Image: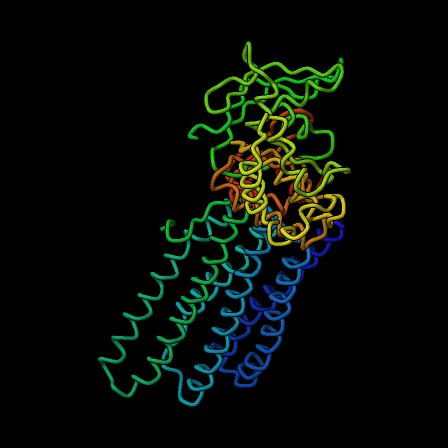
Length: 218
Length: 252
């Protein structure tokens, strides 16, 4: 019976990883849609969010079922409660990809304001944080999880930089305001992706060490 | 009642086999302490040492200090019978005296203690049956055989019998393992009621039961106390790998 339960936990872990891979891919593709001004790809990202949502429901239901059927304790209990929280953050990262896709569709209606440099850098950093928070989850690597948390401030700093740069465009020419605002929103969405990755990493530390580190790491 | 039970360097043997090794454990007063562990880990022996029941088995002996409210129950001149009045026990299988009525089962300990006054007996029997949450079910059949009750009622009858002599501690050795889930739930509720007045130590195979009723839980393995702590802590973040493995079903 216990062996069966641990197989169920392994299967749940695989489902979470598949969801994580999908969400990462959504960020990668939406950034390509933005940079390459590809409407079809942006719409495809919006469409694929349904798959992310389906994973969210699947994982949540599975967690509730396993809690009800096996009443897990200790490490198993922390794994399940962590999985239930991680899935929410992953689903919201998926939503951020949709938000960016919608901004990309708006931006593509007008000429490109400027070459995008910092936004792809933010996206790359955020995406890597998502990937490594999940790597830390799988490998039970608290050190990597703490490292992910520490990198949140780099993404925050990039967001400030994007904001300052776009402010100069808006002050120089009011006709740029709409496009600049869309881009500021994109930077905000990417910053949220990094926040969600940080949440995941904090919960991974809890799962491994049993210590709640939320609101304590810088 | 302020100290509960403090066990220091308790060792126990059955003949040559050393079944408890250097147990140090404090059980808080007016609280429930659960003892968990796989079969043969010494948990039943441990509670039987707490009211000197262990030594009743031929060839069995125990060495160490067991302070109950500051008094060493293994001290010189201590009467084991008096110890067992203060520290009552309920067993795995409900064991009412088969030939006695419900009333006589509860009154048995009092009569043994010399209580003869009918009014006193009536009052104490009724109070014990109330405390064991059994009064309403048996008040009209006090003269019927105790063995005619359901399993859950029989177990509460045994609890009433233990409570009648007004103990300070109640030891329970797997009190629900022969009961269905509804009878189990009633006993668990009763345990939570009783801990307002009593120090309770419960041995259980059912880890969810320990998680539900106990304030503190101790994990025994191979005659040693591996870990003890607040139940909420032990079941979410145990310190010892062996505890983790046991409560997550990886062995045992």
